[in-house]
Length: 222
Image (spheres, rainbow, N blue to C red):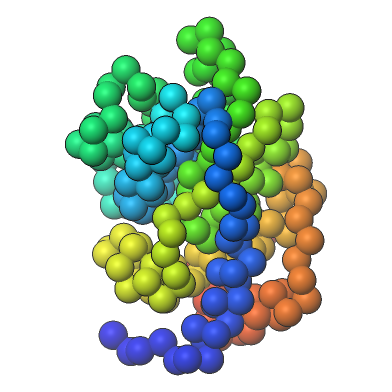
């Protein structure tokens, strides 16, 4: 595999730093895990439960665009099993395993909680580091009346590419996903999927340079 040039890493890290919101943790009523290909997110969420940040641990995710090419078992079921192995009791876990995107994660979880007669007031979202901002913006659009904080595995950009991400996905592909997520932060508010988020000029410049360098596999195609 050809090493990624340092100039590309510099641009990608600019996106990484923007995507991460670095919100401080606050006690919540439910931890909502937006599942994906990255099982380290399950470990982060389970540890938050074990540390007492919320009494209910919700895993949301079926098979999305990426994971349907990797797995046959829903993301949420796999994540829940990791939490159980770490010591979270089954009675503290709720599974939503039909959603296929971030908006559905929130919508389907909201419906599931309603069906169970549950109404948590404060949420703690757990997601991949570079999807913090988009997850937060989506939750605020879909469920605006609920206070929410977002967190992720506490890894640096370098550590995430080297160790945290799914081994079936190359660092180049992960950078392309970050590029695609930035495009969605800009485009999705117009579609009614997210609240608007300001994107600094230097971050957008890095985005455009990464596209010019070929990191465009995860872009929305009109």
